[in-house]
Image (tube, rainbow, N blue to C red; front, side, top):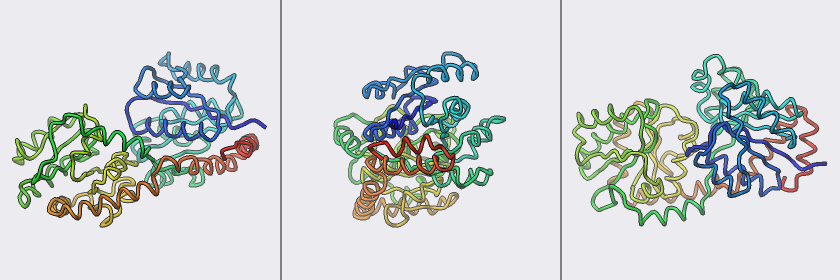
Length: 385
């Protein structure tokens, strides 16, 4: 019996949360004795160098814009590997995994990293096909699973694999980041509230700005920082001006900053989104011992425990958001207590060391679901399973 072979079909290796989770997954599987190969639809992107470092340089199968030619390229490149699993790492790449897998008797596992509804709607004609063509789907949030089931995907075909984080690597970057130059520093009596993400409508940074304005009436030494770029920046800057937040109340710092360094100089993190899957920034903030205030978008309200590691505020409760910010701004002791609890929660439930123990049971369930004796045999012979 041969050891387990998994081929990853990668949509992009740009600097993003999905790509970071992919690297974590590949490392965990490698350490468990799984044979891995990677096939990417793009090239020369950020995480490609990290795959090169572990001898997994991606095979580029995206030379043609035509999906048909890409499928043919992928099929040809897979010939000498003959995988047991072909796993997509981005929603649009589900098509390639699903259509090529039958050629090699492999099981196709698709990916879902958003809230399901936006992915399906955003892909028009192909949306439902991308959701339903793979034999199974791995989502990174319970909210995505619920939404996918509401779209008539069988509940036995979708599995949740939560995001994880490499704690030693983050801690190393966090400590080193104290030496980096930033547009703001943590200075008493000021309290720094930070919000991180793409400046798009779904992230609702307007809520953060309105809450910040209200909170500063009670606590004038509060300062807000928005980290990210996007199409809504100009609108948000106008809103900040109208709210009287310039020049001392808020700063838009762009996206070219090291997140551990930002967190190192912050006192609390605010996530005010309407839609999320599983926001990686929550894990980073909690590891940095920051209390988190969030809406219940995606799995944010699961990761953040209300009253224990931060506060979960209803979507449109700007007054409640402001009150929570003020509560934390006024008490360094409360910030420390919630921040330490958040750190402990990440260490217990979201440590990268847990990943293989979460992933292999999913593979086994998918093998049973698809009735793939070939995959079951490979799993039983894999030394790390």
